[in-house]
Length: 413
Image (cartoon, rainbow, N blue to C red; front, side, top):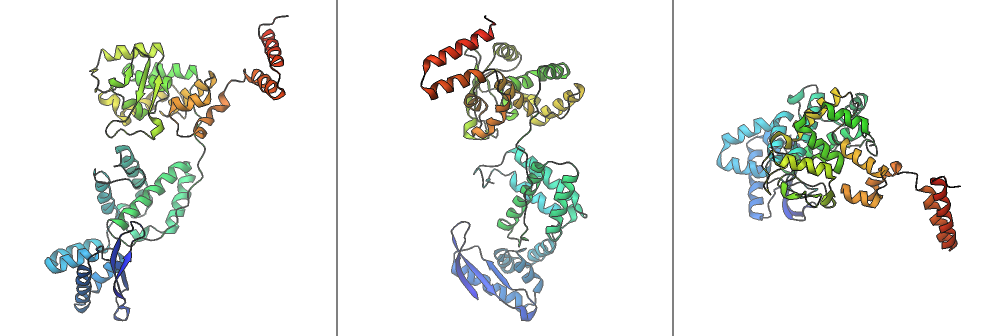
């Protein structure tokens, strides 16, 4: 009881905590960190709690006990500006999720906010994804933006998951929503020092990945319905397997038209998915020629974007692509499927999977193995003959087997 030193398991720092039990006086037990390693300051906070108790401020002590008001803030305002303390207490007594969400997103968009996973500031796309998930969760609550933390119960989480699945939403999308809610809770706990309900976030089963890709006829139909100014971007995805973000981040210094390849690198807030995403990708001659024509129409300095203006904006590209696929009557197609289209056609052309992994910038071979089913079977007999010859230790038999295969292929009697 009282003031004591305790090590924080999350960051390893030692902080003073206060533990007081005045429940016989109608005050919830307070057991919270002072967020300071200075004993004199912690003892001063303890005296402030006692002053609040003696003044009959059970409301403020209850907020501190619940984590809605930090001891440091309460102590500072009690000493300097008690009117400000009253205003803060009124807001934090029952804060709406909408107002808390606004604060959260302002923090997420700050360059000072670092992702605990990547140790870097969040990208605009990540924040946009969190916004979409949070908006969807608020829409599912009866009170919407006016709902409070008390409305986020275990029962609500279960009902939300069920309703989303019934609506045909994929497991991956549901999991993104739950991840956003967990991130929101973590921010409330670590930054606002709120007492957060301990909820279980059961993840949905996710599929191994989409299998949608376009055949040559579908590609031709998509080209026919895509505005001319936009087709080069979509064509680049099909012929190189770049992610849309990688393509839109390209600078002309990355495009080596004479040597027939382009380099994938990071620029500013355009982040690579992983270190293996840094790579060189070959360009077909026809695509290189069209890029050269494009360079004559736009600023093409080394640091200039290959796709300037709206061409470099994901959501603009998304809208154009959706309209084009509808006009072409292509069903269940997304921009990312153009990358899958490259992977499937490369596998069908006989590109070895290790090489395909490098070309697509996959972090693991498991990600590339999805295209193994599209590898041609025309080499199976030859591969079997080579394996058998190696096992039996006979190169002569291997040559004979290959000769027989050649006679069959060219119908030699």
